[in-house]
Length: 163
Image 1 (tube, rainbow, N blue to C red):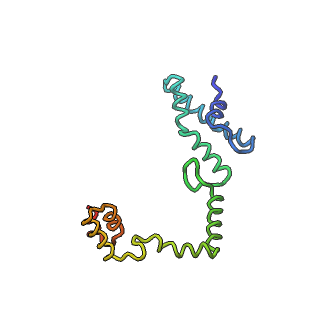
Image 2: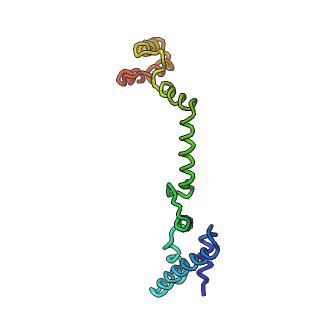
Image 3: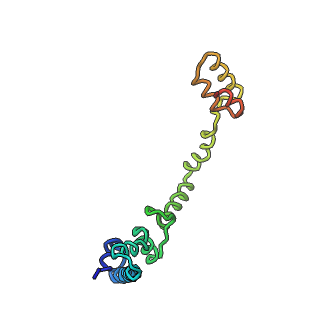
């Protein structure tokens, strides 16, 4: 006779719950496993195949363990991956961001950042960039042409220079 409780404990691993509740859940899963196993045997499957089918009904045991923990603790995860961040951690991250936004230096950095992220560096107009590209073409200076074409806002002209 197979010990389905032991099979479930081996596949599921330790549950981070009260011992009595963990035993109750393990017993319920073992009962489901045994029922599915008996159905397979009654259909004429070999015992090894019936056990494999019975175990297959649960899918990924790590996901089963995570779902049990989430259901028991009442804590959902933000993302369905194994390494998901809990809701408490998400709220903590939100609180940290809110506190950063209250800091004057952080707000000042946010205000100045878009100008640093723009495509054209300050001081280079479209005309100056076109002049650089033309000079690079005449002097066979590929890096200068590439720089100018990457920073031009006029896409057709930038494409011509890049080619």
